[in-house]
Image (tube, rainbow, N blue to C red; front, side, top):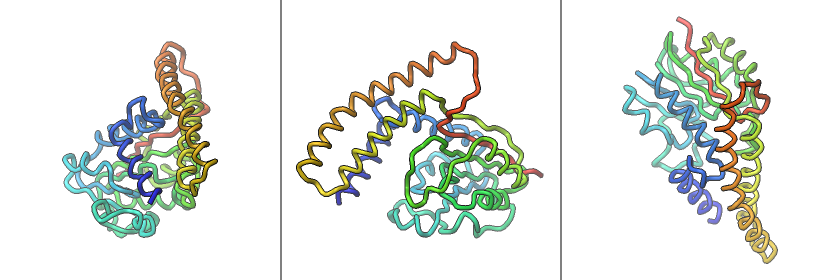
Length: 258
């Protein structure tokens, strides 16, 4: 009961304030929005959203394409209600579609949850038509999540290799975030997860006291850290562009070879 209410409240709060500095993970949600806007530039024809989850972007893509098909794993789909259940239940390593079926494919925050990313990318490539476009987003520096379905993290080198091995031509690969965003965002995420952990335990006197203390500490910390992220990100434009060794994630756009 508590877990369901907590998750529902978090989803509602994220939908309303996700990209504002009021949200502890606002920079991550802004990066997700950046991926979405990039994907919209290429979306056309028949689109397949592999690992679609609750299909939060369906309404945004449907006006841009002929058809939208959401695909998710049968085990994961049990977590969703009838209102947001995908049309197709299948393993991303063996999609039930004919070769050359889609113009656009999405793999948004999915690769970290699969045990064979090479095979998943090859399957996405297989179902794409020649010159079809695959849009991928993945986290890099991010805590363990959705366990036991968190399998890995990928560098830009690994992502380029995966695209090449699937006969995909790299159009774009973009680093999202840097050291300061990583550092401050991870503190925010740690505090959010610890609050969630306390809420999901059996409440006792010590748990309630600890929850009050952490929440009282966290709320101003979230706002302070987020303001720092905004300020530092703005100031970074004034300095030379250096190699970034601490990415929060990557955005990849690749096109299937004719």
